[in-house]
Image (tube, rainbow, N blue to C red):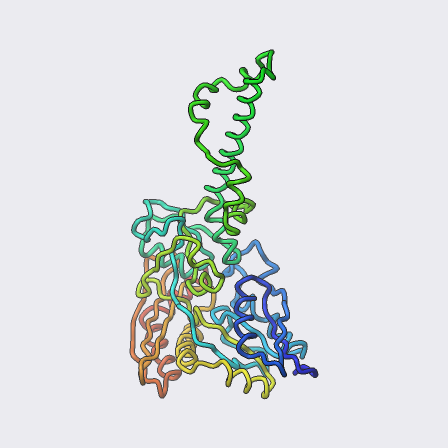
Length: 382
């Protein structure tokens, strides 16, 4: 634990991670014991040109933060719980699990289309093996392509092609207007501009296409749209899939078109939408738990992560698990797919809350016997 009164909280530097850490900071910090955010670069941040699954293991965004705590440089660390491995560094525990945000996935398009509204062969971007398999299971005709980056970067890549084309059209039109003005003032007596603009007459008919200059149009764009203008991209996407919680926490939920994907078909990743705060010092653990912990969320994510651990899916298999607490029962749905979405093992079950972890392990064993283990093994080989 820090020797001063300030509690040091390790976090990644992405916008979403900083917002999640600020959420914890606001609820834990006091005048006597303020909370300082410490930005840490993780392995997942450094390896920018690989998909998460290609990093070979879950925890690419976690270990560096927890190591800061183990080494005594920070008191606690904030994680997106779905990124966490099922085994922790020695001495580390999940000190607190705040109430979970929305756990499901959103289809993100420029105009809020539903999945069924996408045209045949539409290009959909995702970094997740689970989402890829679920998309192909629901719509085998889709062209699902890899997409990596922070939440805002992914949305910018969706918007980039159309906005960049629009910018180019406006720039071209403004240049053509300048050429027309030169003609009117006889700046081109030799007729050079006529040679370069054979379709001038047609263009002049459309000279009122834009009622703003390029600068005025740019000034009217949102920050997200301006980012898209400078964004490099490999593909033009018709849609992308993102976690609702991440889009909401990033402040982008209502700045782009979205539709919810049905959670019975698109079962979320274990612990999706949940934040975990890890620590090792008993005093820090006690303080964080008292201030932040939400018992129903902790029970639900314990069930989800127990099934994940028992099946051994990690990041290498298309696996979704989602649990909710209803009185003395935990209702859980699990789904394991082949990587191409053609095979699926899915089941829902009610578990007794008093033995939820043990019952979750038994449920995982039943899923394995029904073929989930074979699908996970095949995915690992791929």
